[in-house]
Length: 100
Image 1 (cartoon, rainbow, N blue to C red):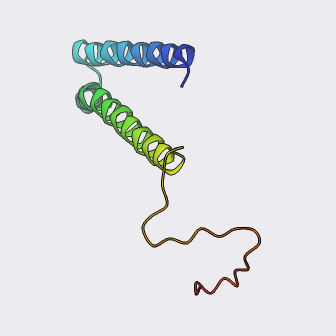
Image 2 (image 1 turned 135 degrees about the vertical axis):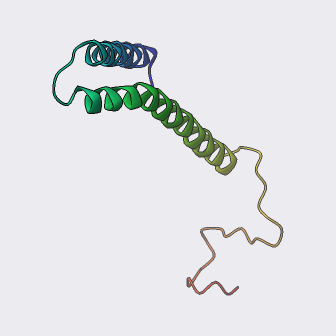
């Protein structure tokens, strides 16, 4: 991901969290029907959303590392064929049965 995209995403996350904290504060201060349930929901989201975002970012980085590791292993310049593997040349015929 590009640096600018990361910065925009981070600013959006910060704004959403600030709005969520403001909503939590306002539901705690104002008394209206259903404010207790809304307060509990806002409070749970204030804790749960950052944790879920952190887990998502962590998993994304792990998947990205795994993919880049597999690609780098598959396309190494100095990778030798595995023991017992036969290197086929274009002049050799291969019927696809797996037999030599």
